[in-house]
Length: 136
Ligand code: CA
Image (cartoon, rainbow, N blue to C red):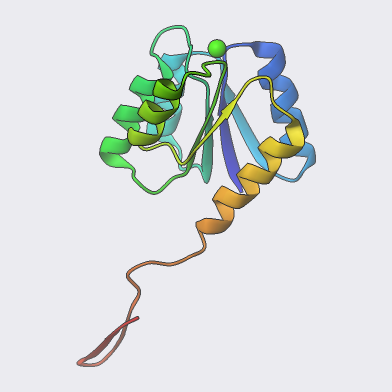
């Protein structure tokens, strides 16, 4: 399971990455918006933890661009923005979850487990045998 953490507070980013690595995930980190966009375009992650206030490209803009070509990969916004309109905008742009700072690591980890578990629910599965197709 491979995760990307986008967070410009390096110490927080590295602490979260280390904790998730210890929990058994492969973890990449990005400290700014431009690098984050390059990473998500180049790599195939199982989940992205995305900060909103970032140098370079804003987290919501990253999310907007990402969702134009990838609607499957779960995105968890982890932000100090606590306003309802920020949460609504983030979720409407295609985030799957929104956690505000400060946060408990146990909760972040539980939400990551929840979001990556959902990935295993398969959609639009068609079984084919010769001329017979079974749409599950
Ligand atoms: Ca930030």
